[in-house]
Image (cartoon, rainbow, N blue to C red; front, side, top):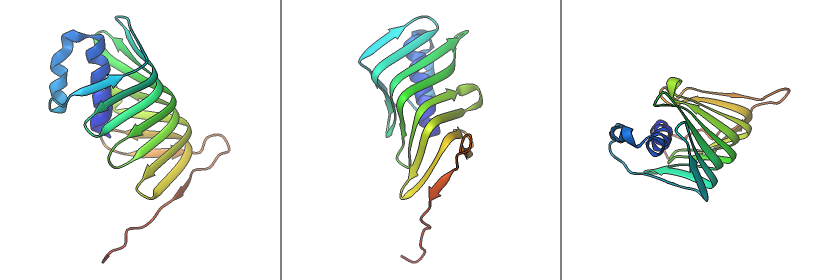
Length: 157
């Protein structure tokens, strides 16, 4: 997931500031594809609206809207809202809203969060995930609970 979130951040940064094209080599030169029904750009913000999607390799983020914020030439925030999906070969994460902060490699998904990895499923109100360390924390929200179904791997099969 780390590669994908970084790719999303780079894609937004590249689209908003074409002069930082060397940043693409950070992901080994894999192409970054993006699309939306409507795109707008200012020097500080790139917005993808309507079926917004960023893809790099096998990883994808999809939402009703994706917006990147650039401060002093650096991407400082990526926010996805409405029917947010982060999909990697290993897992699918769904939420109502996601905020990725490149400075601390953290993505926070909120709303009705569902994390699926194989047959394993975990649900809650807020998922905080560090893309560098892969440390995760799921919270149930006010009065809610975190719930899950985990299928242990069977040895010898």
